[in-house]
Image: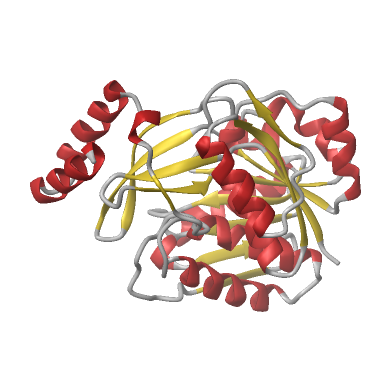
Length: 301
């Protein structure tokens, strides 16, 4: 059985227009999807002793993700306020809460029981990657970070290096992939939204077009793509088949609200008025007045 742990960021994504919050965060999303694909998944991270933390814990447990290394701490669970424009998510504002944690010896030793450990650039765990790489293979999501120095410092430890390349053309995608392979990554995945995806190693290069659907919500689609790619590589599937399956899985994620589902009503008391006001102003700059009014009405309820 494929065994993958994810260590790092988690969040509750708060959809103001719907009055709902959903478990999320790159690493949490990867762990849930690995389990859904038939792998043995674990999540290592930190949540608060609040209702948002309860939502995350319950969702992970119901998805058969090992939460034995999920710690609960005093302080708020991380959250992000999300707006939408034509189904594409817009990140309005966030609070990291207690999600930025320092792994202990037991956490690191736990990773030895897994073939790979997935970490995201937003997890704040870059300093631990060399030691994590001594325990299991490393999957790392660079997301939209583009600094060459950062790619080198992390990429040399990666079994799978993933890059969010929406907006990059073929030449730019290939250049980033070549740079990561040259510094030591074994596989590089570049996802480009509606432009498809690229998967490369030193001996393989293949692309797949996006599986185009009418999206309900695009949040979490990239994390699904990463999870299915890592799962397929560890199962030693053919690279082109991996990309095709990943594109299908990412398209399916776009057909429901939230990165992994599990909606719960927002308790607006958990979101301070100051942060809510910043979110409303950010949405006003990007969204329609009608959409903003609906979000304000739902937030007050």
